[in-house]
Amino acid sequence: MKSTIRIKVTHPAGLHARPASLFVQTANKFYSDITIQNLTDATNEVNAKSILSVLTLGVMQDHEIEINAVGDDAEQATQALETLIKDNFGED
Picture 1: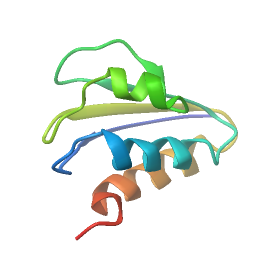
Picture 2: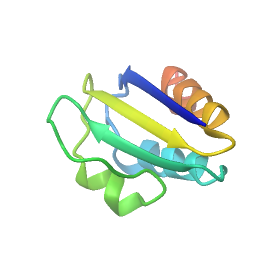
Picture 3: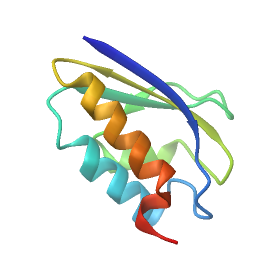
Picture 4: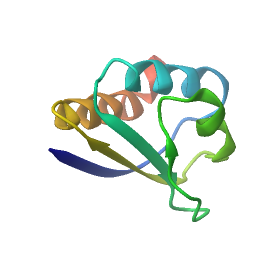
């Protein structure tokens, strides 16, 4: 099973520090292989379960990203990551 989403990151820090950590922690809850790509900066896909890889993308506020998941729980994985980003990583 494969699932792909495109979403804009609206958090002021983008995917750095705490938001990146929460993103990777969420990705690691799933068995699927998950990759992330910064569409705004046209980066290569990287492993969404690696904090160092996610940080190298340089995702800033208002950048668009693409998340791809492949595996039995791919749909649940992309839904969880989408919810995390839409909820602004649990911040107001």
